[in-house]
Amino acid sequence: MLTFYRLAVAAIAMLVIAYQTKTLIILKRNDLCLVIASGVMLSLHFVTYIFAVKVTTVANATFLVSTSPVILAVLSPGLIGEKTTSREGASVIIATLGILLVAYAGNGFRSFGVGDLSALLASLFISFYSMIGRRLRTHGLSTTCYTAYVYSIAAIIALSLTGAIGSNPLRAYDLTNAMAILGLALVPTLLGHSLYNYSLRSVKVVTANLFPLLEPVLSSALAVQLFGEVPTLIQMTGYLLILLAVIIVVTTRSTQEVVTDFDNALKHHRDGERRVY
Image (cartoon, rainbow, N blue to C red; front, top):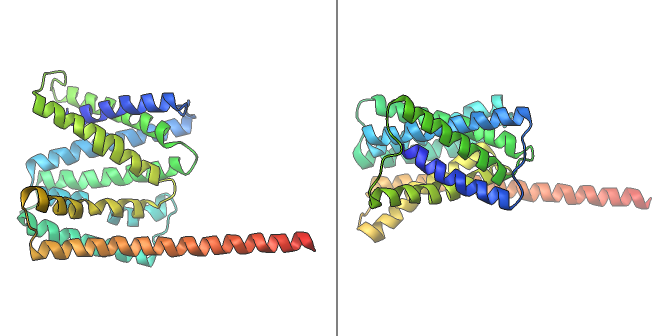
């Protein structure tokens, strides 16, 4: 039900935005099939992750769902033709070690159970969601159109799952829960996931999934100010490893962009010389 509400509110908002900006188009059959698949993956990701947070430790759920860069580093070369460079591979390994330290320092690891399996499935679903989104975004589908369709389909899937397990999604909630649902819909879903999908047009899926790993770092910094929760030395070490991984990716991308710009400038210069002669 939580998945349905956050996606439904985000879908309505994005449909309005897409309609107002005149970016909502009728999709071709192949694109429509991919958008439906993307919506299913997003809905299953939210359902399995929220379930994991409920039945396992936050540390375990956070660590296992953050393994998506590892999955993408393995799958993306074969499925969407995006090769993982040695520096990107090193970043994935460093970030994974950092997340492992943070998760272990949080609550430690207990035996692998249903909740842990659910978090791992959530990571797999978001990986496929990322690859489908990358395919559609690089083939010209706008962010507003893509997310309007995907959020709507994902909400329908979540509502269907709610009905399948016999829950009533239309029951009344108190103000605290209603505000929490609205916050989840507007900030991490409408804003966060839409920005993520926007980035998929120009950023490889492995890179796009490394940047969200800054979440525990930023959350920890806010927790110091808001709740007086000072991280342990092990957690700080993990955060530094995550930052290092992101820095490696950023510097690699910047270098590649400089090289690309230089090559393009050189090509234009040579073309100009040929026209003169």
